[in-house]
Image (cartoon, rainbow, N blue to C red):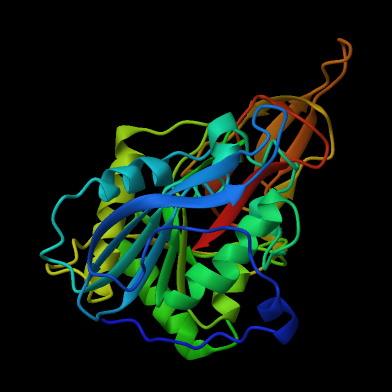
Length: 344
């Protein structure tokens, strides 16, 4: 099902600011192009240096445009692995349209293996729409908001749990005011073909790439494909299959979508989240994929400052399936312990 185009609105103030990122990529030229998004950055290591974010463009004909990104958070690896692999294609004879590939959009964080940028300490996925005259991370966000996303009809941002979370492999869409757009996003998430399909609730949607892209009327899909600061053959295979499926679904690539039987999940309200209110050692009582009932004990938090203290028990707030859990066994106050989704 081909995606539909939408026209973004850019404020006059933003339009007057020039983003310092430049590129030699010609987004209107047919063929395969490899290059960089070049962001000048003067540092102790390089006085007249630049941050060089790898980018690839496939273009053939006048079909829709897909924008694929990974490493929005730098410690999530399924996206970069699958997209660096996609970018090495040497033929696009089966393409009708344009594919913009940025395997590591938060490149400084990707190089350091951190969730947020080591340069300015900002979480890219909480700083959209960004600022052209801001910090490194804000400039990257602004370039995507005003240059790359406006070109796109369909946007895929591949996430996993990073170093602090572990997730069931799911593709997700959100509840939107525009129900036609919501339906397009859900159809694309379904076409991605992950083992789980989630209608996702965000605790802090403000400043997210997801929100920015959706507010611009685009078809947007996100994922969580694993976690623990690494990847597996299975999660990488899910990412690769999902990318191909989306290209076919959008009408950009020839072929048939590889259908997968997905378990459908929903997060109707904040009871899906279990926040930890103690610092200590996690003794898990349930695992990823387990089906639980409201009131079930899901974890015990053991005090690590002294012995002889009874652990603090945590209980499920709803019936459902455990889809995300805290990854390190040491947890702090305010960390998300578990996420429980309803099975549809």
